[in-house]
Image (cartoon, rainbow, N blue to C red; front, side, top):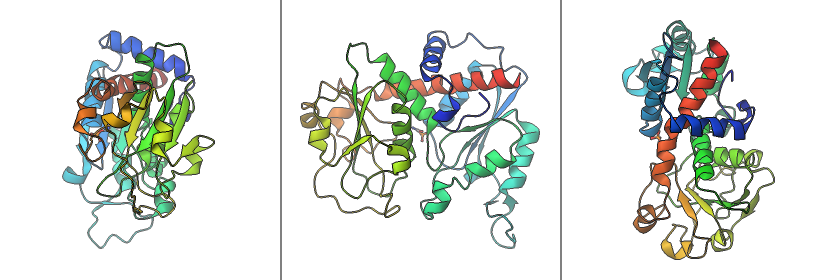
Length: 317
Ligand code: CP
């Protein structure tokens, strides 16, 4: 693997899930692999799971880890090409990346959607600069349109929880939120599930359809009750409007996942990438109930990251 920014960087999804499960069974099996090499974890946005799971994964491989919380700790970055930097910005992203090239064997970056310009976000205005200027492999820790390490962990979690004989029905359901949220997790989950042997259904209110470039021919249903019927897995996530970019059209029905809605499913396992707004996106009873596999998902973030770092190290050794 030369880089990791989407599912298209994975040659064989089933093989890489198998490798992740082997690493999970024996996480310290490759402690020498990264010896003498350095991974830079660059966060332009907040994180709990991605930061900590990536650090654990890198340490399990013997990598040196540099974590830069760029928004709080670094110089104020300029992203515009050709900018006359006579304002608040102090360092151009191009120069920052060229310097990271000198210090790191792998650069991993988190750069959320700005939610102001649809074009900038759809075209990955920040991640694309890392892909352009980095001379070492680039890993996405969540970008404007995708969260591939999360989606990989989600595939591992579904695989662990699906031992039955029929193709599982997986429902990605929109959930309420108090502010406009980006599309990366929903897009990415759709993209990865399309590569899995599952029946994927997406449900969201009218006005909240995801980018068709990601949903492709996946069935989108605007009636949550209908979509949840007989579900084996429910993935709960909020996102704002894509068509009316970053808007929050009014929704009259209650889309929060509750035990009453779970009763309509095939005893579905409930997933969420976290952080979650309890009793807004899903109820306490669901979050803390027996059907939740949400903390298992969070644990699997270690093994998705470790598998990707290990694959990248194979490429650069
Ligand atoms: N799920 C996830 O990426 O969590 P963090 O934003 O805390 O890293």
